[in-house]
Amino acid sequence: MTNSTLDPITLELIHNGLKSITYESYVALKKSAYSTNIKERHDHSVTIADPKGRIVVQAEGSFPTHLGSMAATMEIFLQTIPREEIRDGDIFISNDPHTTGGSHLPDVNLMMPVFREGELICFICNLAHHADIGGMSPGSMDGSMTEIFQEGLRIPLIKLFDKGQLNQPLMDLILLNVRVPEERRGDYFAQVAACKLGYRRMAEHLAAYPRDLTLAAFDEIVERTHRRMQTAIASVPDGTYSFDDVMDDDGVGTKDIPISLKIAVSGDEMVLDFTGTSPQVRGNINCPRNATIGAVAYVLKALLDPNIPNNHGTQSAFTVITEGGSLVDARFPAAVASRNHTCQRLCDMVIGALAPALPDRVVAAANGSNTSIAIAGVDPRTGKPYIYFETLGGGFGARASKDGSDAVQVHMTNTSNSPIEALELEYPLLVEEYSLRENSGGAGRYRGGLGLRRVIRPLGHTASFNVVGERFVHAPWGIFEGQSGAPGVFSILCDEKGEIALPGKVPTRPLAPHQSISVQTPGAGGYGDPARRAPEARAEDLESGKFSPSAVA
Image (cartoon, rainbow, N blue to C red; front, side, top):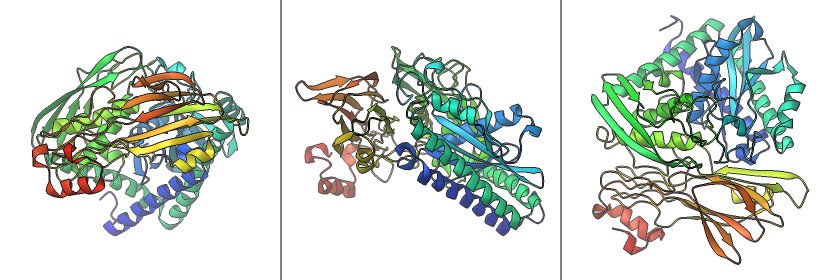
């Protein structure tokens, strides 16, 4: 133990207390946010970082991929900001992927230090995805963007609050560069409120537990997680495993973009080598290294020991090799807004590589997409601008004992689909259809999850929209003879011209009142030979009506 007075029971009490602080702050951010993207979809995370910048606790419900971004931001923060400039009451802000450890510009980090008797004890941190951060297109996620400057406002590490006082000129500058500034201001102050709540709860914690005991608990929580992750890695048979896959395209002309992975396992050591992956591309599917590491940490935890806590210890237990300037280690001025599509593919690739070693734990390819839609315009009811942004779920891969889940966010994209009621209440939009895509899951002994279909029409005005998807060309693969799931489909439904097919990445274009945008997300791959369809699964298929009898092997 790092401290003789830190017995296992006290450690557990402290750890659960810290988790409670982060979760309460997470809920406070969600309930006080203005945008549907946060209050309904829960696209945010809360953590506590120690004085060394290590993430010690992440709130339940937070994004696994945000762990990589927040860890990288804290590392750069402590390397950049002199300790004497970190004061009680400060709140720092940043978002830039190329200089401050961000993962993409819409994800804005806030960090608030907590002191006890003049000594820095920890940081209360949160990250929220803002529905717009400026740039060339509403929603800041348009697939036609080719450099970081087009994607929105880049915020360096800077004080939003200085000893408790708002830096009003900075806030004015941020809000001047975004669409719908009232909504953005509300989301920023929801983040601030969550920081301040975490600060108060941490002060209460420090009144109950001595400073030295708390710092010792930080070390022990991280170290125990590290050891547990190493033990989990040791359960994988020694050997070298590999997998190759391709992204559909980058949205601006480059197609069939290769990603290569080799995994070497020796005892409790694992090296994941992405050498041979495509150089970074012009489109915005490039992935910063911190997001790559976050995706790898998530999928190894999910495969090997799902109950491991999310903290620095998971990321320090393995080694990731990337080539600078590649698709999975993008460098300035690469566009990275749609990096989550690539992160999804990385999860599938790690699973695919380890399938021979862990056949009972792996799943077939999930929908492999972070299918996004942004619709913007002026609300004819109020005369005010609006931006509706959402990422939609799809199929989850089948596993060795169960069908894949339908219409869910998968892997490290831990959000919800927006309820129709909330969408129609907040925006001048009509949801004409919200359904499961029949037969979009790959056949197998256990079938892949189904994608979803959402059809949306602007009411009484012409709006603009853009959509970005993956697995719209290369279908999600099945595993162990399971069949592929259906790829995604975008289209415009016109009252007078019928259906107009669209590619998988559509730059911003008009959407008239007589038109609807149809989003059909990919399904997922099946597991096992369809001819050996599990009897209990066959009965469920026929009873539910999700499959026709002819579609069930």
